[in-house]
Length: 273
Ligand code: ZN
Image (cartoon, rainbow, N blue to C red):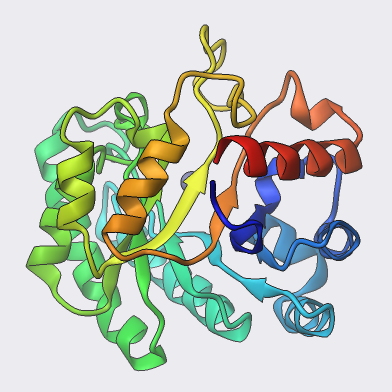
Protein backbone atom coordinates (compact mmCIF):
# COMPACT_ATOMS: atom_id res chain seq x y z
CA UNK A 1 0.00 0.00 0.00
CA UNK A 2 1.06 3.60 -0.51
CA UNK A 3 2.88 5.52 2.20
CA UNK A 4 0.32 7.79 3.91
CA UNK A 5 2.93 10.56 3.95
CA UNK A 6 2.37 10.85 0.19
CA UNK A 7 -1.33 11.73 0.51
CA UNK A 8 -2.28 15.13 -0.86
CA UNK A 9 -5.74 16.67 -0.53
CA UNK A 10 -6.86 18.02 -3.88
CA UNK A 11 -9.25 20.77 -2.87
CA UNK A 12 -11.84 19.59 -5.42
CA UNK A 13 -12.64 16.75 -3.02
CA UNK A 14 -14.30 19.17 -0.60
CA UNK A 15 -15.05 21.87 -3.13
CA UNK A 16 -18.55 22.69 -2.00
CA UNK A 17 -17.92 22.50 1.74
CA UNK A 18 -14.61 24.26 2.45
CA UNK A 19 -12.73 27.42 1.51
CA UNK A 20 -8.96 27.14 1.00
CA UNK A 21 -8.36 28.33 4.57
CA UNK A 22 -10.64 25.56 5.83
CA UNK A 23 -8.88 23.02 3.59
CA UNK A 24 -5.51 24.05 5.05
CA UNK A 25 -6.87 23.79 8.56
CA UNK A 26 -8.48 20.41 7.72
CA UNK A 27 -5.18 19.03 6.42
CA UNK A 28 -3.43 20.07 9.62
CA UNK A 29 -6.14 18.56 11.84
CA UNK A 30 -6.10 15.28 9.94
CA UNK A 31 -2.32 15.02 9.65
CA UNK A 32 -2.21 15.47 5.87
CA UNK A 33 1.07 17.07 4.80
CA UNK A 34 0.35 18.11 1.21
CA UNK A 35 -2.38 20.05 -0.56
CA UNK A 36 -3.33 20.37 -4.23
CA UNK A 37 -5.27 23.61 -4.59
CA UNK A 38 -7.55 24.67 -7.43
CA UNK A 39 -7.33 28.25 -8.59
CA UNK A 40 -10.98 28.91 -7.75
CA UNK A 41 -10.10 28.32 -4.11
CA UNK A 42 -7.01 30.49 -4.39
CA UNK A 43 -9.06 33.47 -5.48
CA UNK A 44 -10.84 33.65 -2.14
CA UNK A 45 -7.59 34.29 -0.26
CA UNK A 46 -5.28 35.74 -2.87
CA UNK A 47 -2.13 33.91 -3.87
CA UNK A 48 0.24 35.68 -1.51
CA UNK A 49 -1.92 35.12 1.54
CA UNK A 50 -2.58 31.51 0.49
CA UNK A 51 1.15 30.87 0.15
CA UNK A 52 1.76 32.32 3.62
CA UNK A 53 -0.97 30.22 5.20
CA UNK A 54 0.11 27.01 3.47
CA UNK A 55 3.73 27.48 4.45
CA UNK A 56 2.76 28.59 7.95
CA UNK A 57 0.75 25.39 8.36
CA UNK A 58 3.79 23.35 7.34
CA UNK A 59 2.09 22.03 4.20
CA UNK A 60 3.63 21.34 0.81
CA UNK A 61 1.85 21.97 -2.48
CA UNK A 62 1.66 19.17 -5.04
CA UNK A 63 0.12 20.51 -8.26
CA UNK A 64 -1.81 23.72 -8.86
CA UNK A 65 -4.99 23.00 -10.83
CA UNK A 66 -5.20 24.27 -13.46
CA UNK A 67 -4.14 26.20 -16.53
CA UNK A 68 -3.45 25.37 -20.11
CA UNK A 69 -6.70 25.68 -22.00
CA UNK A 70 -4.89 26.56 -25.19
CA UNK A 71 -7.44 25.66 -27.86
CA UNK A 72 -9.53 28.58 -29.08
CA UNK A 73 -11.36 29.72 -32.18
CA UNK A 74 -9.36 32.89 -32.86
CA UNK A 75 -6.00 34.45 -32.21
CA UNK A 76 -7.16 36.87 -29.52
CA UNK A 77 -8.82 34.11 -27.53
CA UNK A 78 -5.74 31.90 -27.88
CA UNK A 79 -3.53 34.73 -26.66
CA UNK A 80 -5.82 35.36 -23.68
CA UNK A 81 -5.69 31.66 -22.81
CA UNK A 82 -1.89 31.62 -22.97
CA UNK A 83 -1.69 34.76 -20.80
CA UNK A 84 -3.99 33.20 -18.24
CA UNK A 85 -1.84 30.06 -18.07
CA UNK A 86 1.30 32.16 -17.59
CA UNK A 87 -0.51 33.87 -14.72
CA UNK A 88 -1.41 30.46 -13.31
CA UNK A 89 2.27 29.56 -13.63
CA UNK A 90 3.24 32.60 -11.56
CA UNK A 91 0.70 31.55 -8.93
CA UNK A 92 2.15 28.02 -8.89
CA UNK A 93 5.64 29.46 -8.38
CA UNK A 94 4.38 31.69 -5.53
CA UNK A 95 2.94 28.58 -3.88
CA UNK A 96 6.14 26.56 -4.48
CA UNK A 97 3.96 23.97 -6.21
CA UNK A 98 5.60 20.90 -7.72
CA UNK A 99 3.95 21.67 -11.05
CA UNK A 100 1.12 23.46 -12.84
CA UNK A 101 -1.48 21.01 -14.13
CA UNK A 102 -2.60 21.67 -17.70
CA UNK A 103 -6.04 20.73 -18.98
CA UNK A 104 -5.50 21.60 -22.60
CA UNK A 105 -8.96 22.42 -23.92
CA UNK A 106 -11.32 20.68 -26.31
CA UNK A 107 -12.69 21.70 -29.67
CA UNK A 108 -12.75 25.45 -30.30
CA UNK A 109 -16.27 26.92 -30.57
CA UNK A 110 -17.85 25.97 -33.87
CA UNK A 111 -15.13 23.50 -34.84
CA UNK A 112 -15.43 19.77 -35.55
CA UNK A 113 -11.75 19.40 -36.42
CA UNK A 114 -10.16 17.51 -33.54
CA UNK A 115 -6.87 17.05 -35.36
CA UNK A 116 -6.57 20.82 -35.71
CA UNK A 117 -7.40 21.23 -32.02
CA UNK A 118 -4.62 18.80 -31.16
CA UNK A 119 -2.18 20.76 -33.34
CA UNK A 120 -3.17 23.88 -31.40
CA UNK A 121 -2.30 22.08 -28.20
CA UNK A 122 1.24 21.33 -29.33
CA UNK A 123 1.70 24.92 -30.51
CA UNK A 124 0.10 26.39 -27.40
CA UNK A 125 2.12 24.38 -24.90
CA UNK A 126 5.23 25.08 -26.93
CA UNK A 127 4.46 28.80 -26.58
CA UNK A 128 4.17 28.43 -22.80
CA UNK A 129 7.43 26.63 -22.29
CA UNK A 130 9.80 29.61 -22.35
CA UNK A 131 7.96 31.22 -19.45
CA UNK A 132 7.71 27.94 -17.55
CA UNK A 133 11.38 27.14 -18.02
CA UNK A 134 12.36 30.66 -16.97
CA UNK A 135 10.36 30.18 -13.74
CA UNK A 136 11.73 26.67 -13.31
CA UNK A 137 8.12 25.48 -13.14
CA UNK A 138 7.32 22.07 -14.65
CA UNK A 139 4.10 21.95 -16.67
CA UNK A 140 2.07 18.76 -16.29
CA UNK A 141 -0.26 17.75 -19.10
CA UNK A 142 -3.22 15.87 -17.66
CA UNK A 143 -4.78 13.62 -20.30
CA UNK A 144 -8.54 13.47 -19.73
CA UNK A 145 -10.93 10.62 -20.45
CA UNK A 146 -12.12 10.66 -24.11
CA UNK A 147 -15.63 11.65 -23.02
CA UNK A 148 -14.19 15.15 -22.45
CA UNK A 149 -12.50 15.42 -25.87
CA UNK A 150 -15.02 17.96 -27.20
CA UNK A 151 -15.37 20.27 -24.25
CA UNK A 152 -12.39 19.98 -21.90
CA UNK A 153 -9.31 18.30 -23.29
CA UNK A 154 -8.44 16.74 -26.62
CA UNK A 155 -5.41 14.99 -25.12
CA UNK A 156 -7.07 11.76 -24.07
CA UNK A 157 -4.43 9.08 -23.72
CA UNK A 158 -1.09 8.82 -22.04
CA UNK A 159 0.41 7.95 -25.44
CA UNK A 160 -0.67 11.33 -26.79
CA UNK A 161 0.78 13.13 -23.77
CA UNK A 162 4.03 11.18 -24.11
CA UNK A 163 4.18 12.16 -27.80
CA UNK A 164 3.77 15.84 -26.91
CA UNK A 165 6.55 15.56 -24.32
CA UNK A 166 8.80 13.85 -26.89
CA UNK A 167 8.10 16.73 -29.30
CA UNK A 168 8.58 19.59 -26.90
CA UNK A 169 11.48 18.48 -24.72
CA UNK A 170 12.44 19.77 -21.28
CA UNK A 171 10.03 21.50 -18.93
CA UNK A 172 6.97 19.50 -19.78
CA UNK A 173 5.69 16.35 -18.10
CA UNK A 174 2.50 14.53 -17.24
CA UNK A 175 -0.05 14.23 -14.44
CA UNK A 176 -1.52 10.73 -14.38
CA UNK A 177 -5.10 10.53 -13.11
CA UNK A 178 -6.49 7.01 -12.74
CA UNK A 179 -10.05 8.22 -13.40
CA UNK A 180 -9.09 9.33 -16.91
CA UNK A 181 -6.68 6.58 -17.88
CA UNK A 182 -7.61 3.33 -16.13
CA UNK A 183 -9.39 1.84 -19.18
CA UNK A 184 -6.46 2.20 -21.59
CA UNK A 185 -5.00 -1.17 -22.74
CA UNK A 186 -1.66 0.60 -23.34
CA UNK A 187 -1.56 2.14 -19.87
CA UNK A 188 1.18 0.02 -18.34
CA UNK A 189 3.49 0.44 -21.32
CA UNK A 190 2.82 4.17 -21.58
CA UNK A 191 3.48 4.69 -17.86
CA UNK A 192 6.82 2.96 -18.34
CA UNK A 193 7.45 5.25 -21.32
CA UNK A 194 6.68 8.28 -19.12
CA UNK A 195 9.65 7.55 -16.84
CA UNK A 196 11.32 10.78 -15.81
CA UNK A 197 8.36 12.96 -16.78
CA UNK A 198 5.64 11.94 -14.31
CA UNK A 199 4.89 15.05 -12.25
CA UNK A 200 1.72 14.06 -10.44
CA UNK A 201 -0.56 11.12 -9.65
CA UNK A 202 -4.29 11.59 -8.96
CA UNK A 203 -6.64 8.99 -7.54
CA UNK A 204 -10.37 8.43 -7.06
CA UNK A 205 -12.56 5.60 -8.41
CA UNK A 206 -14.82 4.83 -11.38
CA UNK A 207 -18.34 4.06 -10.22
CA UNK A 208 -20.60 1.62 -12.01
CA UNK A 209 -22.84 3.11 -13.15
CA UNK A 210 -21.32 6.58 -13.47
CA UNK A 211 -24.36 8.85 -13.47
CA UNK A 212 -22.69 12.12 -14.43
CA UNK A 213 -19.67 12.58 -16.69
CA UNK A 214 -18.08 15.21 -14.50
CA UNK A 215 -19.29 15.11 -10.93
CA UNK A 216 -19.90 11.45 -10.08
CA UNK A 217 -16.45 10.18 -9.20
CA UNK A 218 -16.08 7.61 -6.47
CA UNK A 219 -14.07 7.28 -3.29
CA UNK A 220 -11.16 4.85 -3.72
CA UNK A 221 -12.47 1.33 -3.20
CA UNK A 222 -16.06 2.08 -4.28
CA UNK A 223 -15.48 1.47 -7.98
CA UNK A 224 -13.60 -0.68 -10.49
CA UNK A 225 -10.17 0.93 -10.88
CA UNK A 226 -7.17 -1.21 -9.84
CA UNK A 227 -5.58 1.75 -8.12
CA UNK A 228 -2.79 -0.06 -6.28
CA UNK A 229 -1.77 -1.85 -9.47
CA UNK A 230 -1.56 1.42 -11.40
CA UNK A 231 0.34 3.03 -8.51
CA UNK A 232 2.87 0.20 -8.66
CA UNK A 233 3.41 0.90 -12.38
CA UNK A 234 3.85 4.60 -11.65
CA UNK A 235 6.40 3.82 -8.95
CA UNK A 236 8.20 1.36 -11.23
CA UNK A 237 8.52 4.30 -13.63
CA UNK A 238 10.30 6.26 -10.90
CA UNK A 239 7.54 8.48 -9.46
CA UNK A 240 7.45 8.58 -5.66
CA UNK A 241 5.91 12.02 -5.15
CA UNK A 242 2.55 13.11 -3.77
CA UNK A 243 -0.63 11.20 -4.53
CA UNK A 244 -3.59 13.56 -4.81
CA UNK A 245 -7.07 12.44 -3.91
CA UNK A 246 -9.34 14.31 -6.33
CA UNK A 247 -13.03 13.44 -6.11
CA UNK A 248 -15.78 15.38 -7.88
CA UNK A 249 -18.95 14.07 -6.31
CA UNK A 250 -22.02 16.24 -6.38
CA UNK A 251 -24.43 13.56 -5.24
CA UNK A 252 -22.37 12.04 -2.44
CA UNK A 253 -19.05 13.29 -1.04
CA UNK A 254 -19.77 16.97 -1.66
CA UNK A 255 -22.86 16.59 0.52
CA UNK A 256 -21.12 15.02 3.49
CA UNK A 257 -19.44 16.46 6.53
CA UNK A 258 -15.96 17.34 5.19
CA UNK A 259 -14.23 15.93 8.25
CA UNK A 260 -15.94 12.61 7.51
CA UNK A 261 -14.75 12.90 3.89
CA UNK A 262 -11.15 13.36 5.01
CA UNK A 263 -11.35 10.54 7.53
CA UNK A 264 -12.74 8.17 4.89
CA UNK A 265 -10.18 9.37 2.36
CA UNK A 266 -7.32 8.61 4.74
CA UNK A 267 -8.70 5.17 5.64
CA UNK A 268 -9.23 4.26 1.98
CA UNK A 269 -5.82 5.61 1.03
CA UNK A 270 -4.34 3.22 3.54
CA UNK A 271 -6.45 0.22 2.54
CA UNK A 272 -6.93 0.68 -1.23
CA UNK A 273 -4.27 2.94 -2.73
ZN1 ZN B 1 -6.80 14.91 -11.95
